[in-house]
Length: 384
Image (cartoon, rainbow, N blue to C red; front, side, top):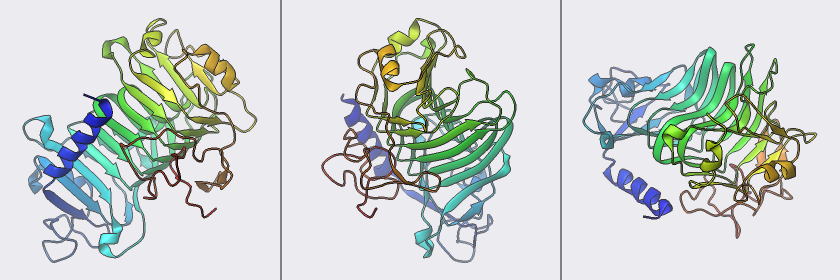
């Protein structure tokens, strides 16, 4: 079956089976409620997102949409505590929807610089929409959203200001099926502990899509070249082949050390096979002020990095099928430190690859706005 068609059919089946709805509100909720209504005594919303994974609340299995009110949730949400038979039963969709309460604010999962993960998913399937995750920190590994189960979906989320030794925006490891990471904004992920490294998106033996994300400023405080930094990091191990992976339409800018894109493997020869097993990487825009260190292509081991200072050199080092239509020019953000929407003269407008798997950008603007898709998380809305 066509992979795109399979992905769409899978999501349609999931949505058709969604029968349970629960509500969470930082402002008016109580975990002693039943969570079945937006407001109300006893039947009103729960107060904490992690309570949705408490087996005592009746959500032991099944397809559940969880609507979350605006507010800053000081939590670590562990999605692996519920029980049930068969992975097909595990579909929890976390949807930031403050408008259900008549509000217009953001749903913020705030690590407070003291929690290692925002969401950590280790069982079944889960999807995340319209959430902001910030402030994760750990002296070892931290991430805004981490998957070790599949299929999963992260869409229209904002993840930023993660610190620690190995901070990551979105981390997916050994996940299979129709995984989708698209239309997300990830910025200011900074390794602040000596010997560490950072990634915007880390795809570790990952199958699925990584498309239309905007990634900015992935850095180290104490640089150690060759430690695995990257706007997008792709790691391949032969034990998990074959991999079907699409990395397209992303804008990856001002990422330090190992560059805007990093591909590596657990041996020197297997990465060549990786490029022939359904891997499609193209129509991305890599850019760094000063244009140094576009990316890395590692053919020896995880930390034996070879860097390329121009896109042309990067393309010459890779198989013909990879990155031939990608660019290395300034994407022209409205404000590269505050607003990553595209200016009207951005070269990222109308230069992406069309896809039918998702049809809105991070703000809910339909894609494509004009004749072709724009690169990055934001479809140009003609305002700027």
